[in-house]
Amino acid sequence: MKRILSIAAACVMLAAAMPSAAQAPASPRSLELARRYVAALDMDKTMDAMMKGMLPAMIDGMVKRHPNMSREQQQIVMETAAESTAAMMPKILDAYVPVMADVFTEQELEALVVFYESPTGRSITGKLPKMGPAMGKIMSDIMPQMQSDMLERLCSKIDCKALQTTNPPTGS
Image 1 (cartoon, helix red, strand yellow):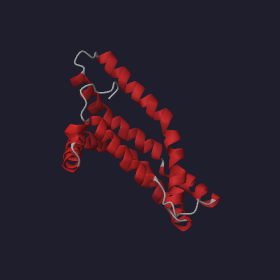
Image 2 (cartoon, rainbow, N blue to C red):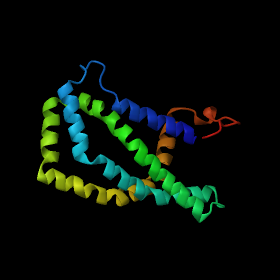
Image 3 (cartoon, rainbow, N blue to C red):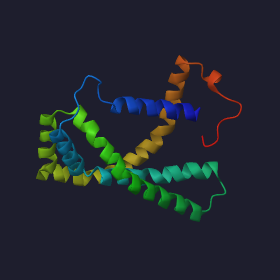
Image 4 (cartoon, one colour):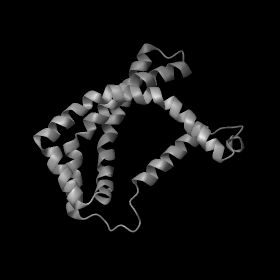
């Protein structure tokens, strides 16, 4: 069932990220502005702080599923998650650029860049990582409710019991 929820969530995120088929490709200027916008947001720092905020809850969940996990193994999991996040964040942010360039107009991107490169914008982006631990905890606290709600809604629309297999695939 978690696999169904993961697939449903991935489909929603993919559909939301895809530009309209009728939309013209982003201009080089829009792409350049989108890159500046991503850089000005310091999104990597904010995402890193949020991930660090979510790690304790992730570790708690792993310990519940694997009660024999040692403190050393827990630390290795946390370090590995941080390493993976740091390695993947540039790829994620690079993938955001064309999406932003497709979604926002050139004028909107210009306004965003002007604001986020301004002293007030820099002050705001500098403070966003401070919210990361609290945001991570909120997401960790709400995620079980969200998964349950999503499953209930999904199963009211499709026959979830019919999708269950007696031999679930490995890795799920």
